[in-house]
Image 1 (cartoon, rainbow, N blue to C red):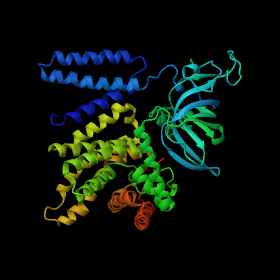
Image 2 (cartoon, one colour):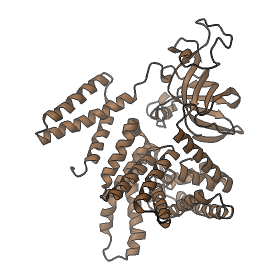
Image 3 (cartoon, helix red, strand yellow):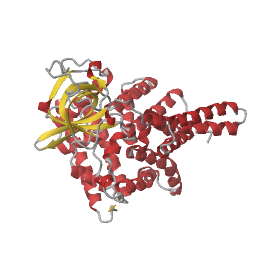
Length: 513
């Protein structure tokens, strides 16, 4: 245990978050704060007694994690979540676009795009909202400028804060940093039917999913109900540049490749599944290869290897090539909107590269622990996201089981068979064993065919990821861009064929409930 201190700390940290979620309402933040302080002081007081000190240190980690989780659920009095209910309210709202388009889907002949929206102010009758909008300094938005009465009965602007998700019918995208005046409907994220109905029913709780990301409002509007107040308002220049690059890369796929293969490459390289056809997603789900669509360790590892190899070809020094790769991986995490599975893989890859720079061996379990702590300190509620759980469980089972499975192989077996058949099969079985129970619990499906499907599809994905990266680098060239687009399209359609084949096999997957 002492050889892997970070891994142990991360386990206690997770226990603390789980504890905080199950605490009764009678136990508040101040109670946990007192216990945390007492645990830390006790660990110092008993520092001469190693075992006793370690117990109090473990308790300190547990209760500190509980504090972070409880704190993540505290919001100021003027937070938007306090003032919304199940009913839709038609209001004027001011806020800032805080992300590129998260989804783009056809909606009654138009495109419906979804963005992360930081709410600044809302026009209301002043019964529930606390602070006057004059504190915001909205230019041209005061009720006096509109000739309205300033009496208590008139609608007035009130300052609120909090994140929402805004859905806009518009062909062209708004940009990160656009400050908008919106007229539309606002409400809490909708509850699934099973929450409103019998407790025995199961379903996906969309409200919980959004609230774990600190999103407490859903806004719907149309293009003609929006006024752009300013551009690049309170925007981070690094994020602004990253999102501009993301949009240019997405457009390159759209311009050069057919919809299906282009959308697939956007999913595996940029984490954008919004335009991937439903029948393709369905085939990946039933073949047990849905993880391919979520950027994770495989994708990040291949990207890191390609960058290091290209820098080696250019005769860049080894140390400098590792530093450049680390910086690029951080940029890549921002490019893919910093999802938990991407962050886990990027943090682990960066730790591994730092270890190589320092000439030190890196322990995988400690690396996983650092990645987990990084994500959970940033947002403790990520622990309850399916993507976080599947990503970490898959890696843990692969790291633990693969060496043991390989020991079962014949020692005199052909090295090529070991490397290209036994090893991929061991990885596939290990990942399936780790994730199958969770997939069954959350999605009511079990996919034994995934063990075989991954052995065939993962090598093709490896080739496609390399082809996709080269396309992003050189796709702007006329002849080379067309050739790479054709090559990637061929690889994508072979993968589609295989997923369709494996998903159609009898007894390959079972839907339960």
